[in-house]
Length: 196
Image (cartoon, rainbow, N blue to C red; front, side, top):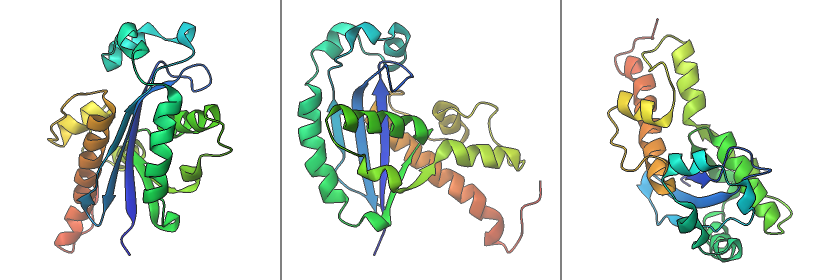
């Protein structure tokens, strides 16, 4: 059975999952190399006084815009049936993305705010483009100095549609991941071993 990879990304009102909230969620499933129907939801924040204006500058939303988004419960009621469908085989599930710990922390808080007792995907295996890029950089492989998703996309020639929009970032992380895997595999195609 092919593993299901869930490429995830969230956009938030700041960097702290205790104070700040998700305003956009994207889940892009991949099974057997094929992309399945994505889940995307925008979420109206409830802790309005905690909104960090610089976070909105990064993701390009205005406060007026996000206050018109659907409620957290609306996103939750759509997301849970979607995740139950893709979680049918959790042993074969992989969470993937860029700087994944950030996204998972916010998703865990989102679940908690929605009165769920746990984030069921928290125990899934993880593929993190940032962690792999850091390891490749330490190993001496050619990598950009900064390991942001945008810098990695540029380095690997991946077209980034709209930076800091959840679905586009999930797609970019996926493309960067497979480009890094190709870089790792390259020396082995000719029977060689990479030596920095």
